[in-house]
Amino acid sequence: MKNFVKVMKALSDPNRVKIIKMLQQKNNLCVCEMRAVLKLAQPTVSKHLKVLEDAELIVGSKEKLWVNYRLNTTSPSPYGAAMLKQLHQWLTEDSEIQKIFKILPAIDRNNICKS
Image (cartoon, rainbow, N blue to C red; front, side):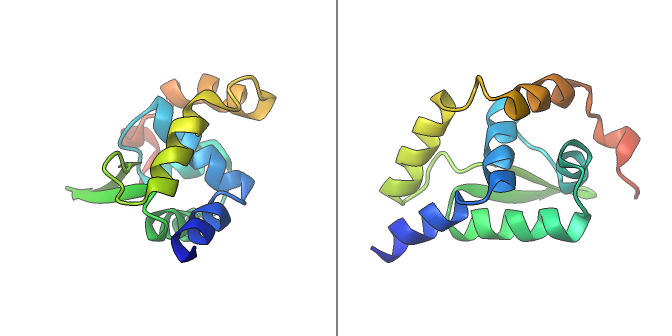
């Protein structure tokens, strides 16, 4: 039950759901890119990412200056895997999600991230 509750709590915040939806559209996003789309402070985005990582919904990997985040397609949690599968189909008609989908292709880390 502990793992189930962790996954549900991770997905109980709208910004974390938005992060999942962003990662479904564009794999390997860094904090700067997510920050630009969500219009949140960097520490806030990092905190959301930590919650999602702890729930095994996303994974991060270091590449040069950036930590790239992607969906955890090999999550050992059956709850996490099930929710990621369902979320792929859910909320695509939501106006906030559609707005994110329109903004996301134009986001370029080389233009927005400070090294």
